[in-house]
Image (tube, rainbow, N blue to C red):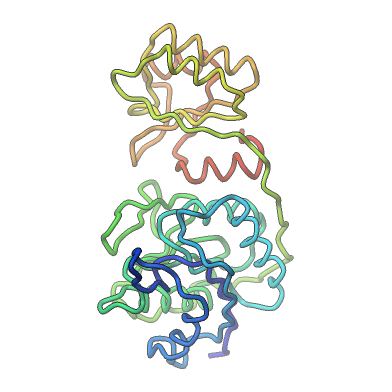
Length: 315
C-alpha cells in the first residue's frame, strides 16, 4: 500500500490536555511526541503525518468564526501537498467548526476529518488513540471528499453532525443522516472504499460579518420582551420552534416577526427536535411562513450558523 501523507492541525481541546489546579488545560509542544509513540499509529497501513500546532491552544468553547477561517485557510494553503487532512479539536464546538469548514471550502476533493476525545490522551482509558487512529486511516484510505467527524467508531457528515453527549464516548450523532463509515471493531481496517480523482483545488471562502442570534421558543415566554429583542439590529435570527416548525400564534409574536422580516432580518424556522424537518403541516408553521420566516428543512443549528456566516444568507 502506497504511503499517504496527512496534514494534521491541532487546535487544542481535551485530547491534549493535562490536569492543573484549575482543571484540564492544554500543554503546548506535548502532543506530537505522544502521537509518534502511539502503537496504534505504527502499523504499516497508517499514513505519514505532519502536525501543525496552533498557538495558543484553545479550549473549543473559546473557538470563534475567525478560528474557522484560520483552519480553512491552512487546509487550502497545504491542499496540494497532502492526501487528506485531520483537525484535532475540542468536542464542545467541534460540530460548529466542521460545518463552517465544509462551507468555507466548497469543491473539496480530499477528506477533511475532525476528531478529538472525551478523555485526555494522558489519562487511562482515553478514547483519543482510537479516534486519532481511525481519523488518520480514514483520511488516507476512505476516498471521502467532504468534511466529517470521526468519533467512537463512526465517520459522520459534518453537514448533519451534532454533539449529543457531554461525557459519554459516543459524543456525536447525525440524527438525520447515516454515518459515512462505521467501524464494527475499535481498530478494524477499512478497504479503500472509493478511488477518487482529487480534482482542482477548492475555493476558499471568507467569513461574512453577521449579527446572528438564536431564539428557542418555550411555553410561558413573555412576548412583549421577545418583541423588544427582535427589534434589535440583527442580520439573521434562527427561531428554534416546536415539532415540525410550529410556534404560538400569538399576535404580539407574529407582529414582531413580520416587522423584523420587513426590515430585512432573515428569520429561519428550525425545529428543536433532533430528527425530522420543518414543514407546513400545522397552522403554527403556516403563520410563521406568512410572516416571512424561512423553513430550515432538516439542517442542524451548527450548519445553519455556518451557512449564515459564510454565505450571508441561505436560500
